[in-house]
Image (cartoon, rainbow, N blue to C red; front, side, top):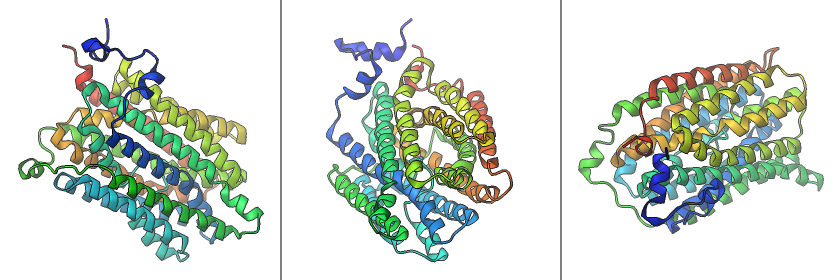
Length: 426
């Protein structure tokens, strides 16, 4: 029997190519969606090198693993607070203006971090800024972009649009990771190590300006009426709160292995150089990026929830095995396999949330599911930093893997019968 989504795609005499690559890339792009994709690429490139440069910079100016963990926790706490506030005002404000403000904050974050040296100052920058220690796309801009992307998307297009959004973000983040080798090149021609790292923060600030320019080209979005804005979460409240609770468990687990701390672990346990780390995280990002398009195809065949769960569990097993391996090449191979699997739940999770709530609830749902994730993930990096100082430095990775498997099983049990429109039989 044909999948309902396949029947929808062939309705009206048009048919999409059977190849998923064609399905993802040939789909026409509206100008506003293209601008959002371009802004996501600019932000992703900056995030890609910042997540590697940040722990290297903090180590260079004299901070240890525990202090790096505290900075990570502070950054994620600030991100959660700002994202929560953004989600609840988005229904009453022009999305374009809010996104422009977020991009300007990105610029200010890069400038401030390049000139920060004292621990207290860095904590303030981390809390108020946009530079996050996680490779995941989090922050105030995420629910805004998700809401704008979902606003005009038909049910049969939604997962594709988010898959391409995630693919572009993943590839740009991978390219940014490769750029993290630039400080070594600058040092080789006479720059100081701290000066070279600070220069990357100025590059991050410039990318914030690029993003702001792209957002200003978007059309103004009409806020919802006061009646709909007042009930930001209505009929879907129960589903959203259950998803938020489960996503929080996943994020708490992920906080034990945020990319900055994994980079620090590789630096300290195996003596990995900045250039080698940038190359590794480049390929890690490439694998994660192309997994998004695979996730869209798997979701079409097996469903969104099944795709989230049954790609996540093997990735967690790889992370646990990497923690125990004494050989760098084996560790890197396991982490690359994990990268190819662990991010498949990103476009599917976003698409699922947007599908099971009403259109008027989407901005609030994106925020309510994103903010607890960020809050939960902000707690664990401090613990992970402390665990990195123990005799078994791989312990944070083990904790992360076990908790993620628990989350996957709980998600499957709780939502196996809650289907998005395109998966419901008629």
